[in-house]
Length: 387
Image (cartoon, rainbow, N blue to C red; front, side, top):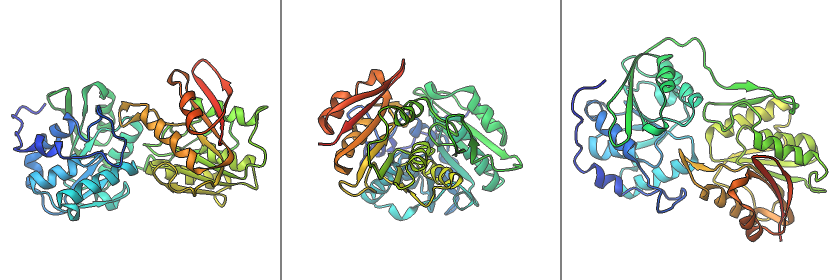
């Protein structure tokens, strides 16, 4: 454990309070930063001040607290950033513009271009162990041999398994003292990596194709239970809406819905869209492996911004119910509302969700008449016809 006192950064709280989540989901209970962001900057302050330009990498910065805090308060320059969600990228960019430090930040995919020469990596711990495994492997493989990784999170979302994952890729992993219900793990001494662990591939007896996934891809390389029920409805008596040849997979994840639709309708054009970089990369690979890449256009986009008005005759949606690590119904509400613009008159939204969330009144109000397609102990599938 780190036994030296943490540096109290002058102006840190006031700086973080200036950050905005826009254009990401906003709500009174959602902030653009948390105590883990502040603890990370305080823990790594001395190391960041000693860096030269281009030697700091920030991964998983939700809205800019880490990268912009390092620039504004600690003098970091040439900061390279990787954020999986597109809305996080846009929020960081907007905050950087407002603060006059946009030129100090550049965005990169997870890989050597992001990490080559990095001597300090600041990161918010991801929700899943696969995502952490992919990030840690990339850092160990590409960063400076003297790199130090500072990985922070809220204690309630951290597990001992996170230490173990970091320990696969670094010779030294230690946990700092908890503060304000947050903690920082510090890793150093990159270990040799025999191979890149991602993408990973999976199969399922209900699918006629293999499924690809990267660390941050929702559902991994599997067919999740909600999507399984939605697909069963498409194959059942309700079927795909007659004549639907313009199909959208909104929040495509690993691509199982988009590829299943393309295989079921050989004459259909399919758009798969997700704000996650890991989801978009996985969907492209899944579509290529299934032989339908020429008919599945994949976009990293916010909601349905890549879909023209009134284009979709069928939208398939298995919405997320969290923003970062926070469960919040507003994420799905935002996507459902977006469907009304993209659906053609008489087009259909097929939606699967955890039954206790009770989305039906919203769907009826925003889209049109609703009927229940399927239901089990956990999930409900609804079909809504656009007015």
